Image (cartoon, rainbow, N blue to C red; front, side, top):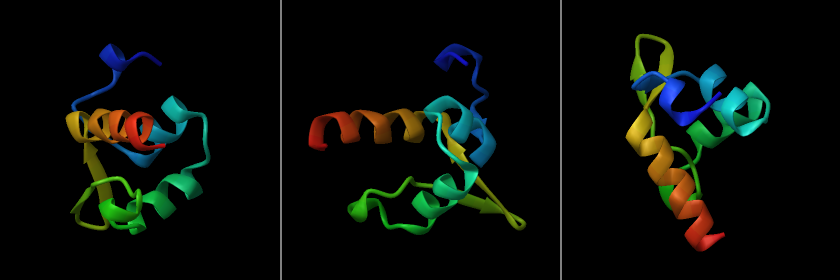
Length: 66
């Protein structure tokens, strides 16, 4: 799945598929603080979502800081 095909608001499933990791690991990243390397997310009801721009900023940060 390419960046362009992703919706503006991402689910854990979108992120897992894009990164090739489990949804469980994505939820672990949601639980972590951003300072500890977690993915910034927000909640709608009981569902967690991520803004596409925040997700790609997180990836760039990971590339810059390991």
